[in-house]
Image (cartoon, rainbow over all chains, first blue to last red):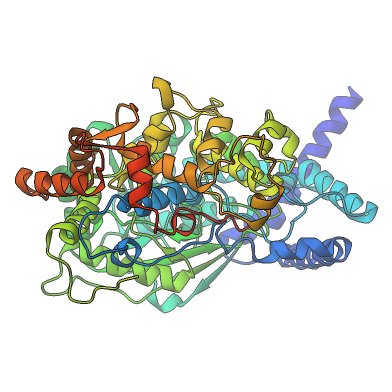
Length: 438
Length: 196
């Protein structure tokens, strides 16, 4: 029938175009410059939109600073200063004031909870989902927004879904085929080629623009690569520029198929859920992997959970006990083009991917950093904190001592004991030498 | 998608809450967003667990007592009105409040008396209007954990109760409490200014 013929013809032309213009160049690591053009147009449009919004509502310019300043006025003086009252430094009934104020401040705004929701934008980027504070400004802006919606949902989304589909199928087929070969250098080369190509295709499927800095520090074989975690896409971003051995739990479903296929071509480290609980087993296996200098560097996210890319939270010490050289990597996304943060309590994987694919683009910077090793007399926790600071400084992120796992579990009692200790010292230890009397 | 709107109309009972607490529209909106952020399961109310998950509150020596103040009368859930009501105690005192206030209206929640009342009930565990020696001991124990011996704690308690207790009944009533703190700048110590 003519209708079906026509549809088939359209589909095949579409597929050939996609393959020819996007998939093949990816295999060779080339770029036809289409995405660069797209980004240029996008940047110009967003700049124009920002100007329009600013012109349309001058009062709103107050919001420029809103993203960085907290919502309450904080007095960060330490406990000693905050508690000194009428008389000397013994227990006073008024001590309750200080603690209740601190407590209520934490209820109104705390450092941790805000890290698990998407960053607020300073100016609107023409996506409905980020439209919190911005009202209707002008018909031109609305027209551009409508155009944006059409482009994103009717053109970009199908394109991206097709690419993602091609990318994943290629990955599964490619790695399975390569896995049939006997172990040899050819196998490694081919497996690298397959991994890189598929990752590049997948990144194109998200309209990803990635800038890699300091490529000379790229993680070497037998090392451990450590990075801050914002979303599952981090993995994609890093593997586009090099091959890593991944560490993680075995999943079911599509993820499981991908995992099983990948491990045939090159040695990733997948754990069963039960094995993950046994920390010694995990450390032992990772140590074996690292000791073999011919194996690819391991990729680990020591935060253990996705944070919203404005800060770096506590690095769990497990990865730093394995030994070997640590290659820190800082990843910073530009929220103007699309929000990469995965809020796993709010969105499932599929709706998250849909949101990513209907954003403008994913733009990020990746900084490779000089390798670090554990120094004499430094324990794993101190080493972890050192690496965390380095990554925070490089990526321009705030550093927080809290555990990312706080979003699911309660804080450890040791932190509370510390506060109690400080307070006890004040009221029992007979006053401190430098007393400030009001 | 959980998009947040900038419309105060979404807050249930917003006018009543505004009159009761004295918060501005903008502040109330900020607090409402915060309430929603803390209410992870979108239940429409907060439970003790929701508050305990705030790291900085859980390490506060008086954290449990502060959380209790949100759940008066043995309730297990606090809605936004209750949430705002507690926070209203910490609203900074503006000069306007003193002049415009209609003497027939109940005292604003952030008056000096009400701030003192809030602090008082942090100590008064059974809410009987008196801080007994035992209650003082218990609250002190909360604040110091295991760092202080029983004898030391008892001597601190005895001294404090003696100093504040005027009628010699071995407990600190609310009047005695206010008297002992009359020179203190309560307004400044118990105020949290919301910037926008």
